[in-house]
Image (cartoon, rainbow, N blue to C red; front, side, top):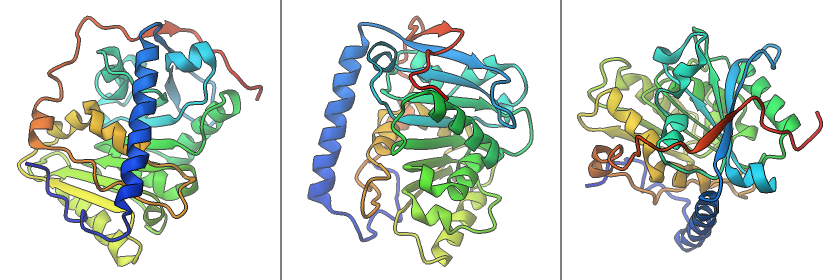
Length: 295
């Protein structure tokens, strides 16, 4: 049974076009995954390199390291439990942990560490600026995903800089924005468990209602996952469908569209960790990922 998606019947989808676009995206990811088996990606801890920004992990897939192919970027924003100054904590769960356990995504990953307090969109933007100045990434395919405190950060960053975001997914979060107009301009999927005791689902529902009240909810998806706890939503960070949905979108889409066809079932969530490889090592730790541009 698929998760209930109240917005899934919203107008504006061109299904034949979307099916072809999804097929092409799937082929590209599959080819990149096959090529990746020849060599690992690289991971570097970037400390004190961005004035007025965050320390962050930077991951580059093998096709970027070896062939300098232009790749998309995912910004991963962690929750409050990973805040601090020990950057190893950022690898405990989420995108970097998934890659370390055998998942492969043909993208660069920016995983900043928040020392404490709310995520600041301007600091995240400075980190992205730093990466864009040194690496030839696909700036039309920058994605943001975050959970809990990172869900707040995802919505606040995407709503502040909608022109820089191809799509965003916010898990069990909320928002501190006063103006929700920016969130209505990007493909956005908000998910929250109904049994979340850490961040009540009302926080995400308030964002959805604010976007609706703005009259600009044509690119919005949302799911209230029945009976799911706060920790249950972390499983979404390990699902292929999550990244299929993100990679479907680009800022070049004219008009912008949202993928309403990707589905996630309760069985998908239940089995999200089942094929992780505890012995896998899908990247090499390096001091720096070699820049392909001069800042």
